[in-house]
Length: 82
Image 1 (cartoon, one colour):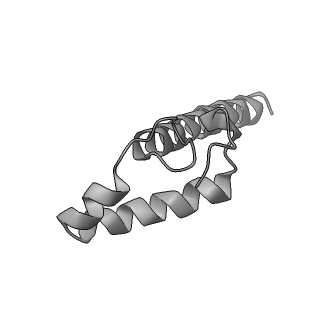
Image 2: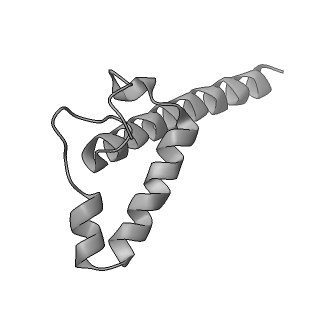
């Protein structure tokens, strides 16, 4: 992990997914692993710090859900007009 990303939104999806998988494993592997993996660093590491990774994943999921809802509404409207 690194400080090469200046903003959480700059972190590629595959990097976020890998880190989320690591955090999920850490959540189930006992206190020592949790203490190691759920730390926050200074300077912050957008691709490592659990709070930043989870928050960015949440933001991306919300954006996708918003887009899906919009597209479903458009499709419904198109079907109604047809």
